[in-house]
Length: 142
Image 1 (cartoon, one colour):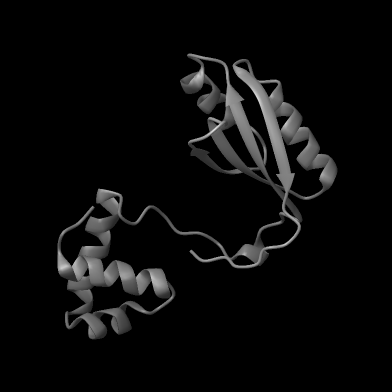
Image 2: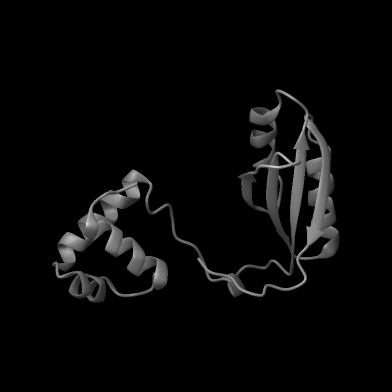
């Protein structure tokens, strides 16, 4: 997204530890805090920095599942729109292979997760779903 070496260095520092104070980042990159803040704002506008998130334990997702979704032909755009309204949808990815989309769902209970999976299956244009409940996370990295 960016060819600027300082932007790349900034993004890598943020990838390793996004909680570093701006003054620390500026010092490590050899620039003023104001210049650093301007770069961050520009990278946000360009979409290289897409948002901020809360720590995983702060989310009330007690159970999570991956749901692989097979679509009927020519329904992708409408299904994607409808999926955005499903409670618990955390991520949605277009994937290669025998499925068209993969969703990450989070919920407070297995029953809530089941309702979300049922809601996905009920969307017009969803041909089939296959879900896998996450038992434990061996490694997570943002």
